Amino acid sequence: MKISDLFSVDGYGVVVTGGASGIGLGYAEALVSNGARVTILDVDAESMEKETVRLRKNGLDIRGETVDVTDHAALDAAMDEAARVYGGLDAVFANAGIDPGVGFVGEWVGAERLRIREGAIENYSDERWNRVIGINLNGIFATVRAAVRHMKPQKSGHIVVTSSLASTRVEPAIGAAYMAAKAGVVQFMRTVALEVAAFNITVNAIAPGYIVTNIGGGHAKNPVEQKAVARVIPMHRVGFPQDMDGIAIFLASKASDYITGQEIIVDGGMGLGVAD
Ligand SMILES: NC(=O)c1ccc[n+]([C@@H]2O[C@H](COP(=O)([O-])OP(=O)(O)OC[C@H]3O[C@@H](n4cnc5c(N)ncnc54)[C@H](O)[C@@H]3O)[C@@H](O)[C@H]2O)c1
Image 1 (cartoon, rainbow, N blue to C red):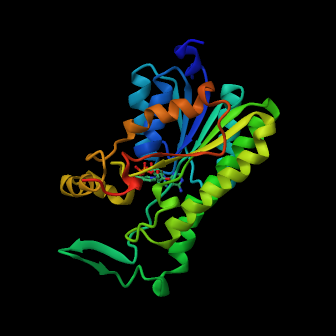
Image 2 (image 1 turned 180 degrees about the vertical axis):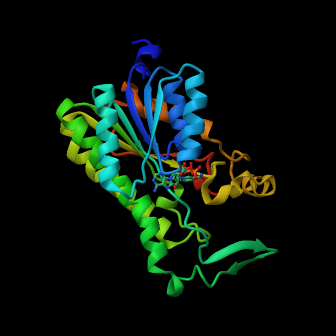
């Protein structure tokens, strides 16, 4: 077996939700640059247009559709259209997600991390809870469901969901709904993996640590924040979407054909604790 065959995604039909920015755009670029045909679905029409035009200029086979993953009928229609264009779906990345804003604590001020009234559980609004669950959990469910509808008859496919270190480790500055959604995503991923294994479909999760993207208004682009976070990452640097390239190709290609129901953490060791 040649490595170039094992990891090939050449000609694959791929869909990435939340593909106009950050980690999703990274997945899309990694796949499309290696010969896949990629559709990005994103609620942000402007960024999607900008990124697809940029990638098409490089001769890459990428298309985009404006879809909000909370609109399950529109999502189904977009997935059907991508499958029609590609004659099936080889890999689907259920990735779109948001950071809901404040948690119950904020920034460190000296040795103290201040409590935030708005993020406290007794003040947590239904609107905020439902918005996060609607995108970060229900949106993943609807994307995976649509992917399975196409992959089951073809008896093949790779589904990848984006979870987070937050699926197992509480990040108090992000808040309860995000933690619940990400933990839910992982157990949902395992359940579907068990169900569809007999149809030769794999379902896995990528759990990023701290990756510089536009999430939460792009605060991770601030060099002061990056420097502070890098101190508590054992590899002493923050992550970038390109750090996901290897795992994205691996989980989409036949290199991972016998691996299912797994959450793979990509975090520079952050989940292990602080080393030095
Ligand atoms: N950046 C990190 O450190 C980090 C860490 C762990 C997990 N994640 C997860 O990675 C995923 C991608 O986040 P990112 O950091 O790349 O953020 P990002 O904001 O850079 O990209 C997210 C993309 O999803 C799109 N999106 C948001 N809501 C949508 C909706 N309702 N329908 C369709 N598209 C929608 C946005 O328009 C955006 O293009 C999310 O699931 C996030 O929870 C990120």
